[in-house]
Image (cartoon, rainbow, N blue to C red; front, side, top):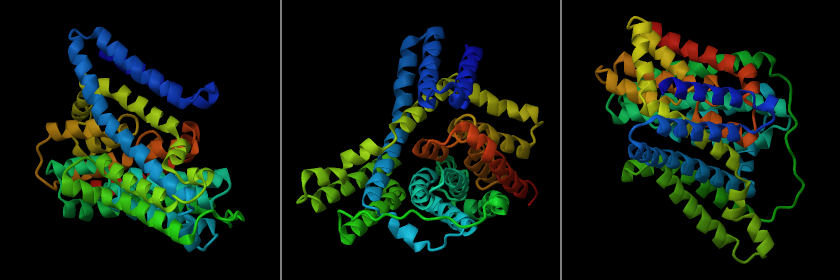
Length: 416
């Protein structure tokens, strides 16, 4: 059964890679792979009821991620409908490609540590779309955004789901991960930035609009302020209530929904509809959410049958218990399969003390290794859906940059 599940996953993965050649949307292949994996799993399982219970439990975990993604995208669409991101884009006065590259990358890097890499990637994608007009510039910048979001999340206890897992399981402390992973994370970002800067030269023409706004500046600033505050309060909400992040983001969406309904209540229905939550939801890319759903449910049978745990365990034998090689490999593997079960398996397998070299290196590797492929992280999947970046383009243009950056940070851990 295990061999069949692996083959199914690999075939589905290859179909996603060649979506451009096949001219079929990746979301369709993703869903087919996910459902097919569960059909094969339950067909070969003796206890069918147990598999159904596992599916129900798995969908409970997955739905939290999907609701978070949908709510965050809707908030961003609402801010964008009111041109709220103009506040940031107009504050960035330079039109130099190279300066914009570094400015946007470091805004993403530090914002990701405060928010999380998924939310930051969604917000920064909207900002990049406001600034860049040419597709090649925009996609290259979004590739850097993915690297920056994952690198920024790796050195913060709330910046990435795997780092948060290690923190909550008392494998790392907040101060320990910041002091140990900050410099490697900066190297992970700055190395690709330095390489990209060599050819990312010249000036850009910023988007200009002459359309008369249908809202006041007060309304724009209010929506922008509440929207950004809703995103910033998610980690605080989680700490205060101990509820999952998607509950916080849904609460933020509800507050923003009430706000927009109130400030536009006296306007004509047609105009009011353009600023409504329902219109924002219609503009969100549901395909990317369905793609994410397919990927996550396809990975679950591999996790439940122990494939990922065995993979993490077998790495010890392959690398003769070399901790650094094992962790480095886990980071690379996390760009193909979900990093959460790999880290969960490592937590149960190893018994190192808090803030040991192993846990700190693992937090960095699991957080940044996913940048090597566009579907290797939640941030990458979100950006991929929001701007329809193809898997092949990312593989050709960004993956090698991400791998070089990831390796540079790993070398710091390895030797320093």
